[in-house]
Amino acid sequence: MSNKTATLTIGNESWDFNVLPGTVGPEVVDIGSLYAKTGRFTYDQGFTSTAACESKICYIDGDAGILEYRGYPIEQLAEQSDFLEVCYLLLYGELPTAAQKADFDHRVTYHTMVHEQMSRFFTGFRRDAHPMAIMVASVGALSAFYHDSTDIADPHQRMVASLRMIAKIPTLAAMAFKYHVGQPFVYPLNSLDYSANFLRMCFAVPCEEYKVNPVLARAMDRIFILHAEHEQNASTSTVRLAGSSGANPFACIAAGCACLWGPAHGGANEAALNMLQQIGTADRIPEYVAKAKDKNDPFRLMGFGHRVYKNYDPRAKIMQKTCHEVLAELGIQDDPLLEVAMELEKIALHDEYFIEKKLYPNVDFYSGIILKAMGFPTTMFTVLFAVARTVGWIAQWKEMIEDPGQRIGRPRQLYTGQTRRDYIPVSKRR
Image (cartoon, rainbow, N blue to C red; front, side, top):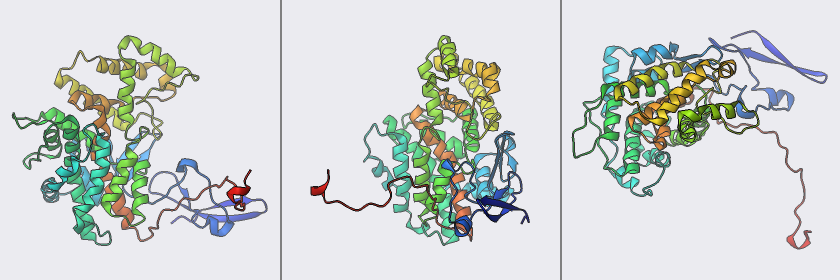
């Protein structure tokens, strides 16, 4: 605990507040007693300068382009680890031993099937329903099927719920995809690893054998690792806020899915690909780059720059390499959309305007290209993000529930509406 204090002075009155240090990153001013001491609140629209919790899970330094899970650099995890090992790390705080990893992999693998009645649940949706609409509903519906893991006060039930969601949400995502394209559901196969199993559930059909391409499976695994956790973003904050009320874990993760659906968050890679479709062909890129540079033009290049990273997004570097590996493996050379993307990437990495404003291609730019090349429609992009981020949400939810100082979330407001006024009967109103 630091002995440092910060002094707030308003008029002739002053108050001291403790300054709390983290292990790395900025110090924070503890204003928990601000209202009690001063009768005032702080105003921080979007909570961009507010630490709403204490966490040991993820660290980001946007200026330096650093992302670490439990202290491990994302670059090392993406290159040397696999997704289920990263899940273990995020949930339990340490990398597993060989025995622990084998046990964890087994427990996740043998939870991948969903209750058979869930398949009937899907038929209630219109055939053209957006897969994320299906995900929000079906994830929330898990609490109707698994009553034995909704007691948040029971550590064992919390663990079971955590494993169930990591295991079953990819199955639900694949079912949402199959329903979206009008194909029969494919059951999980326990002999496959997590990402290979997911690709098989998405792309296999009963009438022929399906062999998972190991390059694509590794790319999928890497995408999951890179999207697994990202500190207190909008959806994670939503999960924590929902969880602070005591809501069951399935409801909390469904709330995270709903928040993730927004185009400024999990829908960013879909928006980036839609932008590439709007540009259409490589010869039109200069026109759209000029529009992006024009302050008076509403057009914005999606998939460039980041709210947190003011340097190159470390995930984007890994995703860039993965993108080129996938395109080379699939032999894709004549896709006009990918041609636009690759040309736009070259311009962004060498044009002084982009470099000066640090508008580097971000993780959403590359992931959209990879997923399209794999055969996923843009409507599935946010669903895949939800599959990856589930473990981050669960780790954050679990950390919050186990925090003895946890309180129900209750942001304050600056009220600017009408002051008190008396009701007037409708017959006397003018």
